[in-house]
Image 1 (cartoon, rainbow, N blue to C red):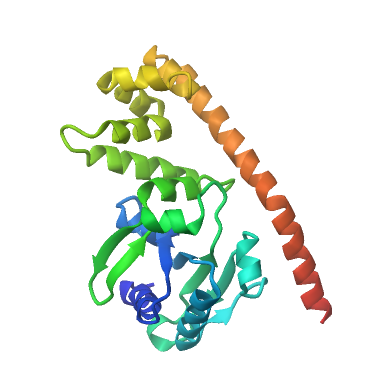
Image 2: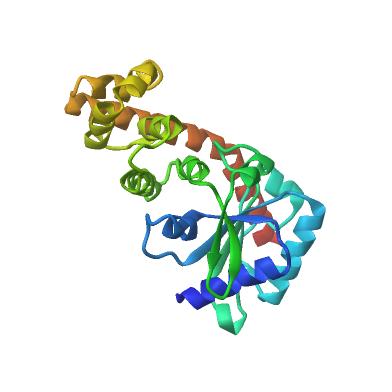
Length: 250
């Protein structure tokens, strides 16, 4: 999958003025936390006019639906993802996943206000999900997402300025996924860490330098988030099952 193929998809979305935020693996690449991704995952503004622009872009890409459900405003607002495969020669085989509502994330309008804009060669300005929102969106039940969450936070920390803002240190302390990094953060920003100790058990333990118990707390934290995501998707999966069964019968 070449960058030019991904660029073709992004350029077409921009050409049709689709109000969308790049997320998923491609966003992780732009933040320096991934090396490769075959898909284009986007969050779109859930409005009829924006959906029409998206459909025009998908038509230009000759994008075919891959799975149920069919693309509609109602389906997107319920939290489902709609999947397509581009068939235009310049982007043959690129998968495009479309969502409007993500578990754990705020409504699209707020995500849009916090977006980051990046200029890509041969594409132009691309609107990307803010790093903090990307990390939230990646906290799922899927095994592959948690190493990415860890890398996103670590890359941001290692790119830090000499004197980061307190909000930045707060975010690292709330999101760090390894005991070693969390202990280092507590040593660097002890005042902020003490303020957050009651909010995150792993921070309280990291202040004591207890690496084993920090790892245990991080594991319990991850398991709780995975379980919540599983519960969130249960009714949506039930709907998908009904749609697939109806499609087979037809």
